[in-house]
Image (tube, rainbow, N blue to C red; front, side):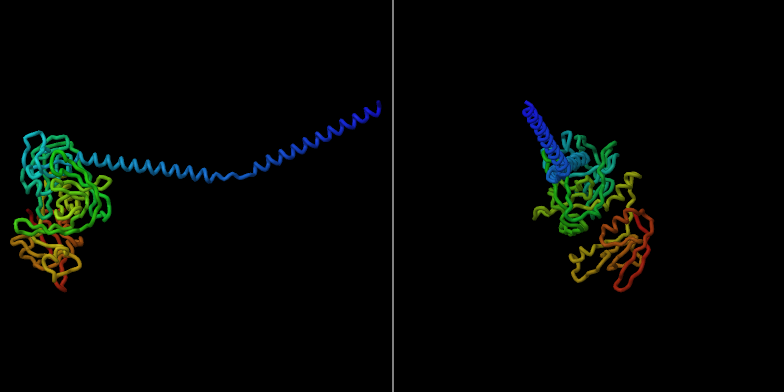
Amino acid sequence: MKKRRKYTKKSNRKKVVITSIILILLWIFGFYLYTTYQNIEITPSNYETTKIQSTIEEQTVESEEENSKTIADMLEETTRKVVGISKLKDTGSSIFSSSTENDLGLGTGIIVSTDGYILSNEHVTGSKYSKCYVTLENGNTYDGTVMWSDSNIDLSITKINAKNLEEVTLGNSQNTRIGETVYAIGNPIGYEFRRTVTSGIISAKNRTIKIEENDEASYMTDLIQTDATINPGNSGGPLITPNGEVIGINTVKISSAEGIGFAIPIDIVKPIIESFKTTGNFQEAQIGIYAYDKEVIPYLNKSLSFEKGIYIAQITKNGPADNTELKEGDIITKIDDVELNTMNDLRKYIYTKKPKDEVTLSITRGKIQKEIKITLGGI
């Protein structure tokens, strides 16, 4: 009996020892696994990359949608400031009828002041003091009187008796670049297509085109060329940038080719618009010369060339420049301190002056360079 009890005690101790060893080993193994996994670096690069790509894609889509909405909103807002102009009064409540552009002389204009000044082409409205009819986006038609016009640049400003109108935003045509997106708005042929929007790019700048009418030739210079579709009824309508700024007034297209239209840069007429808005009138000053850009000279005299300035082709008899030192054939390089390379440079500066103001012309005559003072006249 004693031997058996001793054996049983030894056996129990052995089991306890084995169990303890197993528990210790399990604890060591568990601790090893715990510390090992704690030190494992999980790099979530794939997950993060996927997430970033997803975010970028979503932002791109949202950005495109927002940009699309912005353009649509801009065009919708701008078309409210575009008007129809006709030389004939329609019998209905609006000049936008089934009649064609040729029947009504239908054209386009833009509102440039809240109190009813409308900018358009002279060939749409007629010359100074002409009468025309202007229809707003809401269908209301007003009698219009042309307050200013210039056939050389084919622009006019008409006044209607209206208040609290929405006016367009004028941009900077000098800073435009070839390839920039532009939109043209106009009234191509009649009621069904009023305020048509077309898009394109600026194809070229400072274009000169020759226009022959009634056996006479004239030249339009410094034009913006665009491939945005321009039809006859678009004349006088705006050429605008994606942010809604007007940079030009649509004027003509090349009928023998597609995708070649032209707009008059807006910068040239800004001083006149500002004068009408602030004073209600515009006193136009003049030098009394006919001059041409270097771009026009090849049409007139292929043997004549010069690097900068404008060429005096004729001095108006009894005008401000008559009986001064200025001569035909002189090249004007500056007026006061403003460099001249185009006729629009000269016009834009003269439009800021008043009759009886004095200006200094820097001229080149062969190898001679001199300055000539002239007192501006009025029209």
